[in-house]
Every structure is written in C-alpha cells, then in structure tokens.
Image 1 (cartoon, protein in one colour):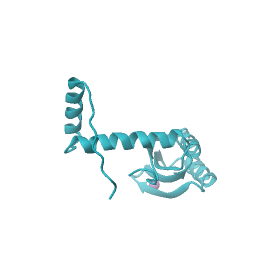
Image 2 (cartoon, rainbow, N blue to C red; image 1 turned 90 degrees about the vertical axis):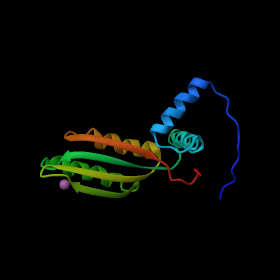
Image 3 (cartoon, rainbow, N blue to C red; image 1 turned 180 degrees about the horizontal axis):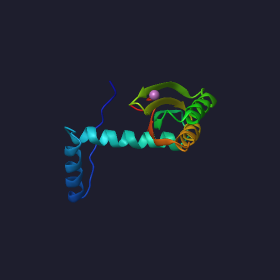
Image 4 (cartoon, helix red, strand yellow; image 1 turned 120 degrees about the vertical axis):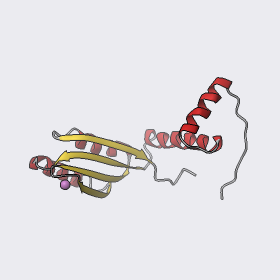
Length: 138
Ligand code: NI
C-alpha cells in the first residue's frame, strides 16, 4: 500500500460548496477520492502532452454496406498495426457497425491514426478515449 499523506487546502467557501455539490452528483463518498481523481486526470493529460507512452480506445460507427470504406478502414489499421492491441467489431444492426480499437503508443501516432479513421468518408461518428498505461499513476 502506498504511503498516505494528509495536507490542508485553503479555498473560497463558495468554491468548496460548488465542489461538494459536484462530487455528490458524481457519487463520490468523500472529497479525498474526488481530489485524487482530479489529480490523476491531470497527470494523464500531462502524459499525453509530454509524449509519453499512453493507451486509449477509438470507437467508430459506420455503415458496412459501403465496401470501399470497410476496406479503407482495414488498410489504415494495418498501417498502424504496431500500436493496435486489439480490434472488436460489433454488428449493431443490419447496416451499422461499431468498431472498438484499443491502442498503446505515442500520442502523436495515436492521434494520427484517429484522425485518419474519423475523417474517412462514411464514418458516422468517431471517438477517442485517452488514458494511461497506469505505470506512473498510483
Ligand atoms: Ni458489422
């Protein structure tokens, strides 16, 4: 278990009241856990900004009847095979597919892959969830 350190924070009463309302809505049971998560979120953002090795997932929704699009998306993924850990394909209905691509690599490469996939003509929606390898986060 990591060493716990207690420290005090001074802030405006109104700001603390707003924070308490916010964390109550997010179902946190105490301020400490909410503040830990804010710090972790900030550290993960820094990892992405400082070009550390990071992880994440890309989601794409598209119509698989557009054959040239399906081939195009596969070609791009082969170009980036070194950073793709897995791909999951879900047939949402007769027309629509949801693809979840899990990646690990440098932020620039991941963002390059994401931009190419998202901007492909026929992709209805694309998302990128940026997270961490967890190595430097406690
Ligand atoms: Ni499908």
